[in-house]
Image (tube, rainbow, N blue to C red; front, top):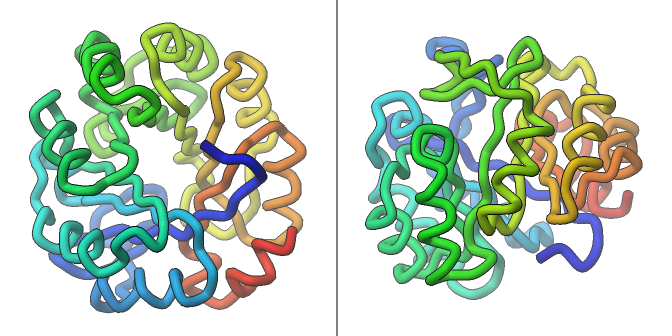
Length: 240
């Protein structure tokens, strides 16, 4: 999936617009415009993968920004790999997206509430499921980061690997969107627990943070606010 370490720009969509939130809290968003234009800018800058998230869908439990995300998939075509999350709650949702042209689906709440969905989708589309483990205060949270589950992220990651997940997306909500640095130890714990790729997310503020996540064992890193706020360019991040 990731033959070499990769930097993945985030295109998070709320109310049809590209945004970035602080710690996932509604009302904290900074807005950055049309998702198609934003996505194309990252592709033109050399992105190999795009990370698309329907933020409204993550909170309400259904794909609220489906038209906007599908427009991005149509626009970038086969130029890059696309992984999509937010509001995907069923095998039918995931299958529709994969057949539409999405390369990987990201399951968070659905995977926690019904782990068998990971196995079922993976059986038909091997390697296509990325299980999203969002951690707050050291435990996995779901439903747009609003509900604690009591699950340990590393133990959960190993469980989903056994069920056929192609990768784990690990987000440290405690540092998400704050531009104050990453939690290397938390990422390392998850990476050490599995053999499948771990995609790290949350807290990246500098190029050094990207190096930290790479050295912690992450196969890729999703970067949002730091890129949008010009802390560094995508080309500089990819050079790491």
